[in-house]
Length: 354
Image 1 (cartoon, rainbow, N blue to C red):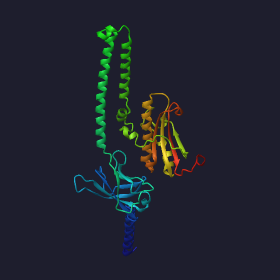
Image 2: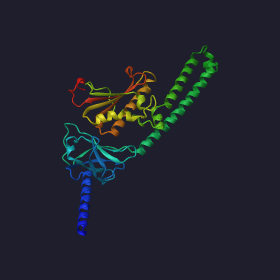
Image 3: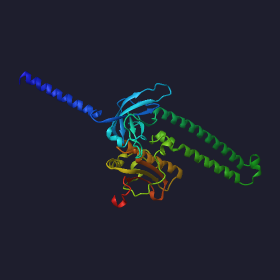
Image 4: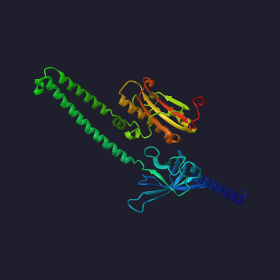
Protein backbone atom coordinates (compact mmCIF):
# COMPACT_ATOMS: atom_id res chain seq x y z
CA UNK A 1 0.00 0.00 0.00
CA UNK A 2 1.43 3.35 -1.01
CA UNK A 3 2.09 6.10 1.51
CA UNK A 4 -0.62 8.35 0.02
CA UNK A 5 -3.21 5.56 0.28
CA UNK A 6 -2.31 4.89 3.90
CA UNK A 7 -2.53 8.60 4.70
CA UNK A 8 -5.91 8.89 2.97
CA UNK A 9 -7.25 5.86 4.84
CA UNK A 10 -6.07 7.34 8.16
CA UNK A 11 -7.78 10.68 7.43
CA UNK A 12 -11.08 8.99 6.47
CA UNK A 13 -11.11 6.88 9.64
CA UNK A 14 -10.27 9.92 11.78
CA UNK A 15 -13.08 11.97 10.22
CA UNK A 16 -15.52 9.08 10.73
CA UNK A 17 -14.61 8.83 14.43
CA UNK A 18 -14.88 12.61 14.84
CA UNK A 19 -18.25 12.69 13.09
CA UNK A 20 -19.59 9.86 15.26
CA UNK A 21 -18.43 11.64 18.42
CA UNK A 22 -20.06 14.89 17.34
CA UNK A 23 -23.31 13.06 16.60
CA UNK A 24 -23.34 11.24 19.95
CA UNK A 25 -22.55 14.37 21.94
CA UNK A 26 -25.11 16.37 19.99
CA UNK A 27 -27.75 13.72 20.57
CA UNK A 28 -26.97 13.66 24.28
CA UNK A 29 -27.23 17.44 24.58
CA UNK A 30 -30.21 17.67 22.19
CA UNK A 31 -28.24 19.89 19.82
CA UNK A 32 -30.07 18.50 16.80
CA UNK A 33 -33.58 18.69 18.25
CA UNK A 34 -36.01 21.61 18.34
CA UNK A 35 -36.26 23.08 21.80
CA UNK A 36 -37.57 26.02 23.77
CA UNK A 37 -36.51 27.71 26.98
CA UNK A 38 -38.28 28.09 30.34
CA UNK A 39 -37.10 29.45 33.66
CA UNK A 40 -37.79 28.82 37.33
CA UNK A 41 -36.76 30.78 40.42
CA UNK A 42 -35.39 29.11 43.57
CA UNK A 43 -34.14 30.47 46.89
CA UNK A 44 -31.37 27.85 46.68
CA UNK A 45 -30.45 25.26 44.05
CA UNK A 46 -28.90 22.85 46.63
CA UNK A 47 -25.94 21.81 44.46
CA UNK A 48 -27.66 21.80 41.06
CA UNK A 49 -25.15 22.44 38.24
CA UNK A 50 -25.35 23.71 34.68
CA UNK A 51 -25.84 20.85 32.25
CA UNK A 52 -27.90 18.81 34.72
CA UNK A 53 -30.82 16.77 33.39
CA UNK A 54 -34.34 18.16 33.17
CA UNK A 55 -36.95 15.39 33.32
CA UNK A 56 -40.62 15.38 32.39
CA UNK A 57 -42.66 12.38 33.52
CA UNK A 58 -39.42 10.71 34.64
CA UNK A 59 -37.82 10.97 31.15
CA UNK A 60 -34.87 13.19 30.25
CA UNK A 61 -36.28 15.90 27.98
CA UNK A 62 -33.87 18.78 28.43
CA UNK A 63 -30.97 20.22 30.38
CA UNK A 64 -30.09 23.14 32.62
CA UNK A 65 -28.74 25.84 30.29
CA UNK A 66 -27.64 28.45 32.82
CA UNK A 67 -27.89 29.27 36.55
CA UNK A 68 -27.89 32.96 37.47
CA UNK A 69 -27.34 34.51 40.88
CA UNK A 70 -29.76 37.29 41.92
CA UNK A 71 -28.79 40.96 41.66
CA UNK A 72 -30.13 41.67 45.17
CA UNK A 73 -29.70 39.81 48.50
CA UNK A 74 -33.47 39.26 48.70
CA UNK A 75 -33.72 37.87 45.16
CA UNK A 76 -33.94 34.29 43.89
CA UNK A 77 -31.54 32.12 41.91
CA UNK A 78 -32.73 31.89 38.29
CA UNK A 79 -32.47 28.53 36.50
CA UNK A 80 -32.81 28.60 32.70
CA UNK A 81 -33.74 25.28 31.09
CA UNK A 82 -33.86 24.05 27.50
CA UNK A 83 -36.76 21.65 26.86
CA UNK A 84 -37.58 19.50 23.84
CA UNK A 85 -40.43 20.87 21.70
CA UNK A 86 -42.40 17.65 22.17
CA UNK A 87 -43.01 18.57 25.82
CA UNK A 88 -45.05 21.69 24.99
CA UNK A 89 -48.26 19.66 24.97
CA UNK A 90 -47.83 18.55 28.59
CA UNK A 91 -45.68 21.24 30.24
CA UNK A 92 -47.98 24.20 30.88
CA UNK A 93 -47.96 27.48 32.80
CA UNK A 94 -49.13 25.70 35.97
CA UNK A 95 -46.35 23.08 35.82
CA UNK A 96 -43.95 23.07 38.77
CA UNK A 97 -40.16 22.54 38.71
CA UNK A 98 -38.58 20.66 41.63
CA UNK A 99 -34.90 19.96 42.32
CA UNK A 100 -34.36 16.29 43.15
CA UNK A 101 -31.41 13.95 43.55
CA UNK A 102 -30.50 10.43 42.46
CA UNK A 103 -30.89 8.69 45.82
CA UNK A 104 -29.92 10.46 49.05
CA UNK A 105 -26.56 11.86 47.88
CA UNK A 106 -26.66 11.47 44.07
CA UNK A 107 -26.49 14.04 41.27
CA UNK A 108 -29.12 16.76 41.24
CA UNK A 109 -31.67 17.11 38.45
CA UNK A 110 -34.91 19.02 37.81
CA UNK A 111 -38.27 17.25 37.56
CA UNK A 112 -41.10 19.23 35.89
CA UNK A 113 -44.67 18.12 36.58
CA UNK A 114 -47.41 17.87 33.97
CA UNK A 115 -49.68 20.86 33.58
CA UNK A 116 -53.47 20.76 33.50
CA UNK A 117 -55.55 20.57 30.33
CA UNK A 118 -56.93 24.11 30.71
CA UNK A 119 -53.62 25.80 31.50
CA UNK A 120 -51.89 28.04 28.95
CA UNK A 121 -49.17 26.56 26.75
CA UNK A 122 -45.54 27.67 26.98
CA UNK A 123 -44.11 29.47 23.96
CA UNK A 124 -40.60 29.97 25.32
CA UNK A 125 -39.11 32.30 27.90
CA UNK A 126 -41.91 31.97 30.50
CA UNK A 127 -41.34 31.44 34.23
CA UNK A 128 -43.01 28.41 35.84
CA UNK A 129 -43.54 27.67 39.53
CA UNK A 130 -40.98 25.91 41.69
CA UNK A 131 -40.66 23.87 44.88
CA UNK A 132 -37.84 24.43 47.38
CA UNK A 133 -35.32 21.55 47.33
CA UNK A 134 -34.84 19.26 50.31
CA UNK A 135 -31.49 19.93 51.96
CA UNK A 136 -30.02 16.82 53.62
CA UNK A 137 -28.24 18.85 56.32
CA UNK A 138 -31.51 20.56 57.27
CA UNK A 139 -33.21 17.16 57.37
CA UNK A 140 -30.63 15.75 59.77
CA UNK A 141 -30.81 18.88 61.93
CA UNK A 142 -34.59 18.53 62.14
CA UNK A 143 -34.27 14.84 63.04
CA UNK A 144 -31.77 15.60 65.80
CA UNK A 145 -34.11 18.22 67.22
CA UNK A 146 -36.99 15.69 67.27
CA UNK A 147 -34.78 13.15 69.05
CA UNK A 148 -33.69 15.68 71.68
CA UNK A 149 -37.30 16.68 72.34
CA UNK A 150 -38.42 13.06 72.57
CA UNK A 151 -35.60 12.17 74.98
CA UNK A 152 -36.72 14.98 77.29
CA UNK A 153 -40.31 13.72 77.11
CA UNK A 154 -39.18 10.19 78.00
CA UNK A 155 -37.29 11.46 81.03
CA UNK A 156 -40.36 13.42 82.18
CA UNK A 157 -42.60 10.37 81.76
CA UNK A 158 -40.19 8.17 83.73
CA UNK A 159 -40.03 10.75 86.51
CA UNK A 160 -43.83 11.02 86.65
CA UNK A 161 -44.16 7.22 86.72
CA UNK A 162 -41.75 6.98 89.65
CA UNK A 163 -43.69 9.65 91.60
CA UNK A 164 -47.02 7.92 90.99
CA UNK A 165 -45.51 4.63 92.17
CA UNK A 166 -44.34 6.25 95.44
CA UNK A 167 -47.73 7.85 96.03
CA UNK A 168 -49.54 4.58 95.34
CA UNK A 169 -47.34 2.75 97.85
CA UNK A 170 -48.00 5.31 100.58
CA UNK A 171 -51.76 5.24 100.01
CA UNK A 172 -51.79 1.45 100.05
CA UNK A 173 -50.09 1.45 103.46
CA UNK A 174 -52.39 4.11 104.90
CA UNK A 175 -49.71 6.81 105.09
CA UNK A 176 -50.68 10.48 104.91
CA UNK A 177 -54.10 12.13 105.19
CA UNK A 178 -55.57 10.42 102.15
CA UNK A 179 -54.35 7.02 103.27
CA UNK A 180 -55.87 7.49 106.73
CA UNK A 181 -59.29 8.53 105.35
CA UNK A 182 -59.64 5.70 102.85
CA UNK A 183 -60.52 2.26 104.22
CA UNK A 184 -60.36 0.31 100.99
CA UNK A 185 -58.12 -0.07 97.97
CA UNK A 186 -60.01 2.27 95.62
CA UNK A 187 -57.51 5.09 95.33
CA UNK A 188 -54.62 2.66 95.31
CA UNK A 189 -56.13 0.67 92.44
CA UNK A 190 -56.79 3.83 90.42
CA UNK A 191 -53.25 5.08 90.99
CA UNK A 192 -51.79 1.68 90.10
CA UNK A 193 -53.85 1.60 86.90
CA UNK A 194 -52.63 5.09 86.01
CA UNK A 195 -49.04 4.05 86.65
CA UNK A 196 -49.41 0.99 84.41
CA UNK A 197 -51.02 3.06 81.68
CA UNK A 198 -48.22 5.62 81.78
CA UNK A 199 -45.60 2.87 81.68
CA UNK A 200 -47.30 1.44 78.58
CA UNK A 201 -47.42 4.91 77.02
CA UNK A 202 -43.73 5.34 77.75
CA UNK A 203 -42.90 2.05 76.04
CA UNK A 204 -45.10 3.01 73.10
CA UNK A 205 -43.25 6.31 72.84
CA UNK A 206 -39.95 4.46 72.87
CA UNK A 207 -41.27 2.34 69.98
CA UNK A 208 -42.66 5.38 68.17
CA UNK A 209 -42.22 4.87 64.42
CA UNK A 210 -40.19 8.09 63.98
CA UNK A 211 -37.55 7.02 66.50
CA UNK A 212 -37.49 3.41 65.40
CA UNK A 213 -37.37 4.54 61.78
CA UNK A 214 -34.38 6.79 62.47
CA UNK A 215 -32.28 4.24 64.33
CA UNK A 216 -33.16 1.23 62.16
CA UNK A 217 -33.22 3.17 58.84
CA UNK A 218 -36.73 2.02 58.09
CA UNK A 219 -37.09 4.32 55.11
CA UNK A 220 -38.89 7.40 56.42
CA UNK A 221 -38.03 10.30 58.75
CA UNK A 222 -40.73 12.97 58.79
CA UNK A 223 -44.37 12.15 59.63
CA UNK A 224 -45.51 14.82 57.15
CA UNK A 225 -43.97 12.69 54.39
CA UNK A 226 -46.46 9.89 55.10
CA UNK A 227 -49.45 12.02 54.08
CA UNK A 228 -47.84 13.82 51.13
CA UNK A 229 -49.43 11.58 48.48
CA UNK A 230 -52.22 10.01 50.57
CA UNK A 231 -55.87 9.94 49.51
CA UNK A 232 -58.90 9.38 51.76
CA UNK A 233 -60.71 6.80 49.65
CA UNK A 234 -60.31 4.73 46.51
CA UNK A 235 -61.70 5.97 43.17
CA UNK A 236 -65.25 4.79 42.48
CA UNK A 237 -64.54 3.60 38.93
CA UNK A 238 -63.45 0.01 38.20
CA UNK A 239 -59.75 -0.84 38.35
CA UNK A 240 -57.74 -2.15 35.41
CA UNK A 241 -55.33 -4.45 37.29
CA UNK A 242 -54.33 -5.18 40.89
CA UNK A 243 -51.03 -6.52 42.24
CA UNK A 244 -51.34 -8.09 45.72
CA UNK A 245 -48.44 -8.91 48.06
CA UNK A 246 -47.96 -10.36 51.53
CA UNK A 247 -46.00 -7.77 53.59
CA UNK A 248 -43.66 -10.60 54.67
CA UNK A 249 -42.54 -10.83 51.00
CA UNK A 250 -41.44 -7.21 50.95
CA UNK A 251 -40.52 -5.96 54.45
CA UNK A 252 -37.85 -7.24 56.83
CA UNK A 253 -40.22 -8.00 59.72
CA UNK A 254 -43.91 -7.70 60.75
CA UNK A 255 -45.08 -4.20 61.51
CA UNK A 256 -42.07 -2.59 59.80
CA UNK A 257 -41.60 -0.51 56.68
CA UNK A 258 -38.01 -1.25 55.76
CA UNK A 259 -37.76 -2.93 52.36
CA UNK A 260 -36.06 -6.34 52.33
CA UNK A 261 -37.05 -7.96 49.03
CA UNK A 262 -38.07 -4.97 46.91
CA UNK A 263 -37.39 -6.81 43.64
CA UNK A 264 -40.78 -8.48 44.12
CA UNK A 265 -42.25 -5.11 43.12
CA UNK A 266 -40.43 -5.03 39.77
CA UNK A 267 -43.26 -6.82 37.99
CA UNK A 268 -45.68 -4.03 38.91
CA UNK A 269 -43.11 -1.35 38.07
CA UNK A 270 -42.43 -2.79 34.62
CA UNK A 271 -46.15 -3.12 33.95
CA UNK A 272 -46.84 0.51 34.87
CA UNK A 273 -43.84 1.68 32.86
CA UNK A 274 -45.28 0.09 29.73
CA UNK A 275 -48.88 1.40 29.88
CA UNK A 276 -50.76 4.67 30.07
CA UNK A 277 -52.71 4.72 33.31
CA UNK A 278 -55.13 7.19 34.86
CA UNK A 279 -54.22 6.68 38.50
CA UNK A 280 -52.42 4.17 40.71
CA UNK A 281 -53.25 3.70 44.40
CA UNK A 282 -50.87 1.79 46.67
CA UNK A 283 -52.74 0.51 49.73
CA UNK A 284 -51.37 -1.19 52.83
CA UNK A 285 -53.52 -2.98 55.42
CA UNK A 286 -52.70 -4.71 58.70
CA UNK A 287 -54.30 -7.78 60.27
CA UNK A 288 -56.69 -7.55 63.19
CA UNK A 289 -54.00 -8.14 65.84
CA UNK A 290 -52.06 -5.35 67.49
CA UNK A 291 -52.59 -1.67 68.30
CA UNK A 292 -54.91 0.22 65.93
CA UNK A 293 -53.15 3.61 66.05
CA UNK A 294 -49.72 2.05 65.59
CA UNK A 295 -50.95 -0.13 62.71
CA UNK A 296 -52.48 2.88 60.94
CA UNK A 297 -49.14 4.75 60.98
CA UNK A 298 -47.25 1.62 59.93
CA UNK A 299 -49.51 0.97 56.94
CA UNK A 300 -49.16 4.62 55.87
CA UNK A 301 -45.38 4.16 55.95
CA UNK A 302 -45.48 0.84 54.07
CA UNK A 303 -47.56 2.34 51.25
CA UNK A 304 -45.23 5.33 51.01
CA UNK A 305 -42.08 3.16 50.92
CA UNK A 306 -43.50 1.02 48.10
CA UNK A 307 -44.43 4.18 46.16
CA UNK A 308 -40.94 5.65 46.61
CA UNK A 309 -39.32 2.45 45.29
CA UNK A 310 -41.49 2.38 42.15
CA UNK A 311 -41.05 6.11 41.42
CA UNK A 312 -37.27 6.03 41.92
CA UNK A 313 -36.62 2.88 39.87
CA UNK A 314 -39.08 3.12 36.96
CA UNK A 315 -40.07 5.82 34.46
CA UNK A 316 -43.49 6.68 35.87
CA UNK A 317 -45.75 9.73 36.12
CA UNK A 318 -45.44 10.11 39.90
CA UNK A 319 -48.18 12.75 40.05
CA UNK A 320 -50.72 10.00 39.39
CA UNK A 321 -49.44 7.57 42.04
CA UNK A 322 -51.18 7.87 45.43
CA UNK A 323 -51.05 6.00 48.74
CA UNK A 324 -53.55 4.84 51.36
CA UNK A 325 -52.74 3.44 54.82
CA UNK A 326 -55.81 1.41 55.79
CA UNK A 327 -54.71 0.32 59.28
CA UNK A 328 -56.53 -2.75 60.68
CA UNK A 329 -58.98 -4.32 58.22
CA UNK A 330 -61.03 -7.54 58.23
CA UNK A 331 -59.99 -8.55 54.70
CA UNK A 332 -56.22 -8.34 55.27
CA UNK A 333 -55.78 -11.75 56.94
CA UNK A 334 -53.36 -12.30 59.81
CA UNK A 335 -50.30 -10.80 58.11
CA UNK A 336 -51.92 -7.87 56.30
CA UNK A 337 -51.55 -7.12 52.59
CA UNK A 338 -50.08 -4.64 50.10
CA UNK A 339 -52.05 -3.82 46.94
CA UNK A 340 -51.04 -1.81 43.86
CA UNK A 341 -54.35 -0.92 42.20
CA UNK A 342 -54.19 0.41 38.63
CA UNK A 343 -57.03 2.54 37.23
CA UNK A 344 -57.28 3.07 33.45
CA UNK A 345 -56.72 6.40 31.75
CA UNK A 346 -60.02 5.92 29.90
CA UNK A 347 -62.89 6.15 32.47
CA UNK A 348 -65.10 4.09 30.11
CA UNK A 349 -62.94 0.97 30.55
CA UNK A 350 -64.81 -1.56 32.73
CA UNK A 351 -63.57 -4.50 34.76
CA UNK A 352 -64.65 -6.81 31.90
CA UNK A 353 -62.07 -5.11 29.66
CA UNK A 354 -59.11 -5.84 31.88
